[in-house]
Amino acid sequence: MLNEVSVFIMDVRNSSKENIGNELSEYLQQLKDRIAEWTENIVVTKISHRAGDELAVICSGYASAYTLAFYISQIWRFADHKPYFGLSFGHIQEDLSAINLETWIHPLMKQARNANDYLKRQPNNTLFRFELPSLSTKQGFTVFNKQFETLINTSLTLKQEQINEQTDIQSLVCSLYLIVGQQNKVSQYLGRTTATISTHIKKGKTPVILHAFYDIVKTLDSLESQEKPPLTDKLQTNIRQHVRNHLNDYLPKEGRLS
Image (cartoon, rainbow, N blue to C red):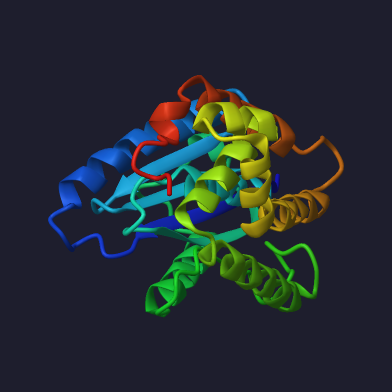
């Protein structure tokens, strides 16, 4: 039986600088536990915290890994040490729940690693890149895998340019709006007027950034077999609920307002 899955390998930029290694490693262990909470009883997920500053994740569904990666990027604590994600998706023969990610060897992991290594070599702050199989024989969804890879990576690069242009407060407002979904709730949390929040949303291009994210998730969902509905809507609802329940832990306003 073929199982539809997605993977990411996440690394952290400049993790060896400023004597922050231990703090980052502890944070990533916490993040590993949070991912387990976000996905529990929704998507089957395997998580490995490797080499201090790396997380590897495989989960059921074509869009699940990218969904997790995007939310991680939005609640990430260390502004000077950004995460970046090499991603892939496709089919596996194995039962995902039985996989030992520490020892599992598969082309999907190699593709995610290649995408991660590509980002590592880039001087900019691009956070996401997909690498897909060349042909559709066993893993792929279409004969146009590489063309699709080019299109999705182009979309991600353009979205990243808009994210990189955000000020600190625009970035925080964007993240909060993703989680709470209403301008007035963002306003209440930050103690700013709704007009001010609306301006930050507009100038920070929050609607464009989030719509691009939603469109990519929907596109990946649409590539799955139609035997069962995608679980990304439920996954996102669960992530938002977890973050809202501990909002100041995930998205503290102190020190980020300007």
